Amino acid sequence: MPTKKYPLERGGKPRLELTWKLGWSDFEIKLDGQQIGHIDGKARELKAGREFRLPDGRQLRIQFVQKLTAAELQVLLDGEPLPGSGSDPEQQLKGAYGVMYFVAVASCIAGLLGALGVELMVRMGFNVVAVFIGVVFAGLAWAVQTYRSAVALGIGIALFAIDGVLGLITMVGAGSSAGAGGIVVKVLFIVVMARGFAAIRALRGRERPAAT
Image 1: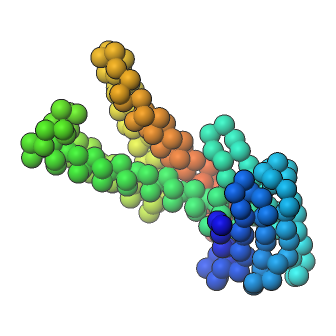
Image 2: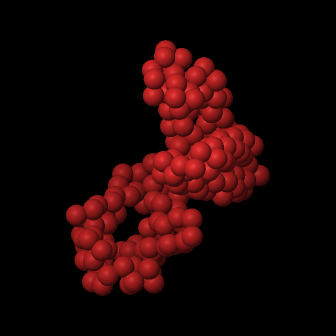
């Protein structure tokens, strides 16, 4: 049975617990171990969204939102996403630079193996250039994480997209579909990274009133 726990305030201890069964059925909402809500139906009821009032009067809204590029369980308290939930800007930004770090490490490892003469990596075209690209990607990821740099995020997405296009051209030219799965993964990675732009805007907007 999947379970998610969230704090009601950033930095607080997890107090809200969500559990459900296969197909999003028997969806239970607990606060401090006490059940405050239950959704009997399947995913269609969760997609419509349900609201529950907490003992302190605040309004909790839970909805499964499915878009063209992403699907997420929205958990909003008085209209604001709970920390750690799918629509939390900090969580979305963490996903964006997390993918960038993953790409950086994978590129460095593949490049090192290629430079050391590992046949599979050599045939796939990995060499010291891949190591350099990995280091660049790590730097961009660090800039996104530390400075919330939309420029660094855009450069990272552009480089990754160019690599994907070149891979697609190579695959089509060779008349092979062996790399189709890799192209799909690259698209998914780009979607996750692209969500970082909205997250950066939201986080900067959250900080702006505090600075004035």
